[in-house]
Image 1: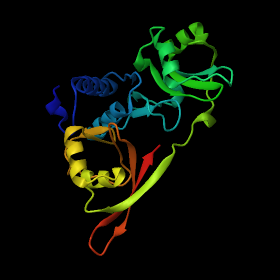
Image 2 (image 1 turned 180 degrees about the vertical axis):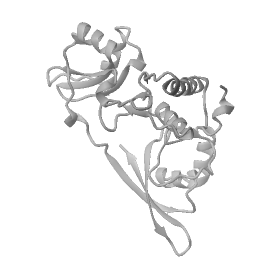
Image 3 (image 1 turned 60 degrees about the horizontal axis):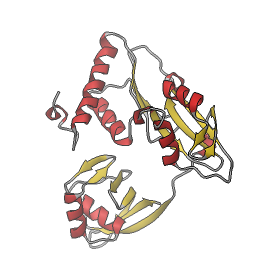
Image 4 (image 1 turned 90 degrees about the horizontal axis):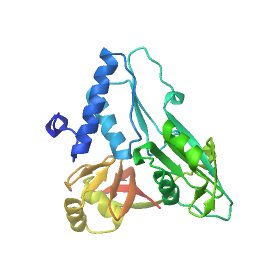
Length: 260
């Protein structure tokens, strides 16, 4: 198919069309051949594209799962009628990396160590870094490679085992910003979020784009809705928390949360 076949999805690249074509084929295979298909790990944008594709086709036999609730990187499963798929069926494993509490490892350190083994980026899900222990979700084959080969990350000795501790998942920290906006257009809401003029925000959206629920828009008049997440490269990520009321001059009081 071509981009025009997915005109309801904004800002598609060629690789997006390839992904959507493949998922569309999986839907057909699930119906005609009763086949279950799993994707590699998808980023948040790719996951949102898949969600919208399934919604457009009213296809309900699809699950996104990244190993725990709220995971950013997820696998997609498309399955046939009368099949029951659970989270345990996904071809992924959680690995725990244990090391001395005084040592410090970063997300980049762990990802780099995995990729140095020839493991591809789309075989790695979320990486959660803690003190003395970190966790990573990998496709089954990649997990086996890591279990057999990772003994050090940089100069830090590590012990790799299977397992995951959900208590290591931290709630995101946010700061609330409030203000009155002329409307719920993207440039107006962004003006409150960034503390910049509406005109500057409109120019920023036209030049850089604003990612709304992970899909990029370049129109300042794009309407934002309560609960949506949006971001502008270089300025951070935000949640449009609520519309709180309207002033006597018909300006809308809104609350936006900035992730810090």
